[in-house]
Every structure is written in C-alpha cells, then in structure tokens.
Image (tube, rainbow, N blue to C red; front, side, top):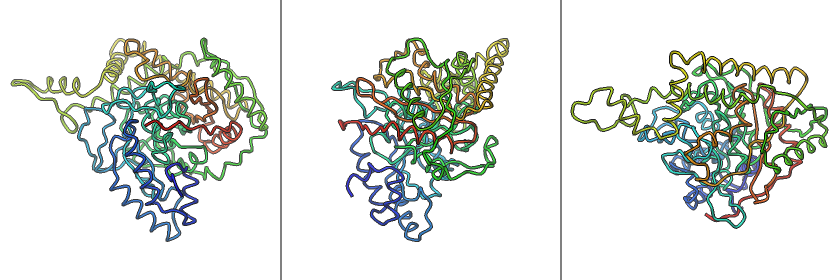
Length: 495
C-alpha cells in the first residue's frame, strides 16, 4: 500500500488487523510526510524515536489479538497537552525549555490504547487566538490555497497545527482543545471533522489551562467515524480533574447508523447575522435540506440571548486566563528574565512576564485582571456570568421542546490570509468565534463537518450542536450530514 499517511483511523485500523500493513510502516510514512512539510510549520517538536518505539510495541500488541481501536495509529498532539519528557510549551516563550515529568490524562489514555505520538503540534499561544498567528514557533500555514493564488492562508486557531497536519495527511488524526471554537473553527477552515465534547467528558488534567470553565479537549480527524473512534479513547472519568464527569463512555462508533428519521433539527434565527456571506447562507440552507432528505424534521428555533454571547465570552475567558496565568512568574518553572543589579522579586515578575507573554496573551491578561478588579467585578464579570446562565437556559428550553440537535454555520467565512486580520483591531478577529462560543458557554457538545467549497475553492463547514452527554447521537447526525454532503476535496500539494 502506498501513501499510508493518507489513510483515516478506521481504514488504517482495519488494515492493521488484517495484517496488510504494520504500525511501523504507517508511522514511517507519516514521519516522511512530516519531514517534507516544514513549510506548513504544523509539527513544532518532532518525536520520531518515541513514535517508532510505540509503533513496534503496537505491532506486538496487535499480533497478540487484544488491541484496542487506536492501537498502532499515528497521531499528533497539540502543544497544550503535557507530554512526559517532551517539550510542552503551549506555544509560549515563557515555557521555553519546559519538559514535564508527567503526562496529561488524555495523552496518557491515547498512549495506553497504543496510539503512536508523532510529535507536538503548533497552536496559538496559550490557545488564545483564531488564526495561529500568536505562536512563538511562528504561524502554522494551511495546506489550502485560494485558486491559483500563492497567499498563505490561516488553518484557523487555536488548534491550527492540528488542523493543518490532519488536512495535509501528516498524521491520521490529532488532539485539539476548544475554549471558544478552537477545534471547530480550524476544522471548518481546512475541510476536516472536529468535535468538542460536553464539558467534563474529557479530563483537563495536564492540559495547560486557558479558561478552566470553558476548556475541553477533543479529536480532529479526517471524517466522522474517525472522530467517534478517537473520542471514545479520549473520554472517561478522571479523579485528578474535579470537573470530570463520572459517566460511562459509550461505543460511539457503534452508534453511527446514519439513521436520523424523526430527529428534530433546530435552525436558530439569531445565527442569521448581518453581512453573512451568501455562500455560508446557501450552505446552511443546503445542510438543512440534506438532513430533511435523510428523514429529519427541520424546525425554526430561537436562542434569544445569542447576541450577548461574544461579549460575555470575552469577559469570562480573559478573567479566567488572568487567574490561570498568574502562576507563570519565573520562580518555579519556565523562563526567567535576566535581572539587573538591585532588581527585586517585583522586577523579576514584571520582566519575566513582559518578555515571556506575547501581545495577545498580555492583552487578555490585562482585560481579565481589569474585569475582576474591585469596582468592576459586578459590572463586568458577574454580569457576564448571569448572561452565560441565560444562554445555557436558551439551549435547555430548546432541547426540552424536543429538539435533538441544532444546525448552524461553523464560521462566518472561509479561511482568510495570514496577516489579513490586523493587530490594530483585535475585535475583528474575535468575531470569528461568533457561531462557536455559545457552545462553550453552555458546556454543550458541538461538531464541525466539512460540507462544501466556496467560489475560491476553500472548504466551508457546518456545525451541529447536541444535547449534553449525547455525543453518540450528535456524531450519528453528523454522520448522516457527512454522507449527504459527500465532501471529498483535498488541498493540492504545494509544500
């Protein structure tokens, strides 16, 4: 078999079980693809020795006949996940040289299942960004191009390296994290599948924290079946994470029947934004028609507090970030600034944080500290928390009325060029999260499925939002949408 790196998880798993291919061969194919793709800047810490060692162990395990689904499958790990003995920097200068002595729960579960780690993937610094332009490693680059244009495009953010690597077939799948859309938006930009599970479904232990009440890990894969396979391995209760849910993890793959007859799919009127490109509007309508043709009932719904979601998110997330990032002080780990004669501890904190954090992280820490400060706490932070409760109730009311899933666009546009969104107006960049942040604020599962191309030949995604803890049902609806959309486009190789 040639081009083994182009396989998905399910295809590769089945080939491994039949003995058509070995994990070592799969891994070597991916390692070669990674070495040939430095122009994408997706992998920032390559771990070929670890990969080949795990691949050999996986081959032995498969021969023994007791291998789980993920065994022997080569994947990439976002740089936000702590990996023992391997640099885990959250794409920040302040964690330069940090090699943890422990493994995050999610990456440990994948390793225990026999998955092969190829290396660490690029991302926005501390997961703060929507374009992967805030990374200390430099920009991750999308494998897609607009028509015959050579302009470099964003793979989305913050999980931009994961998106780029999966779309360019450098790995079979990758881990991502989603605080306000950081799995779903990049997945939509590069034409892959990305699911954010219900808050508490995956352990956050050992994942560098951005906003603790919003962060959630999930898989980024080539299709819905692969997402179901990988998500099952990533989920599960963890005593080390107090927000982790003590719930059984179903066999998500077994729930993929494609039968959605009688399911009620809600179309929220508040997601019809002013200035939404006609192509996104058209794709959304087509997606609803596809689900209707598959037997679902399409109903109009209202989520009245949607318009407050973005401002509420950009109060809550920076507030939690400023609290979480207070620990980076140059004392215990990570980078410490060079101090001048006579500098005390205050100067050390100031210089270390000024040098170590990039502009976007500094901006959010300052906003977060401001909204938590005396005199502003009630006006901003507490008010945002109350709005969050109302947004959550909107969804609860819709689900209580019998809606099974909600269909929306995943992004307000196709991928934009690197450098096109200016530093001068960060709000323009924040608007990219307009369709995704509500899902994090309400703690719900959401999935992005590639559904078409725009007139410049770039992927567009649709988002499905599900009931809490019903990822299996959500994946099945996504599977029906994927089958109907028939998206098979791949980027032309230029790198």
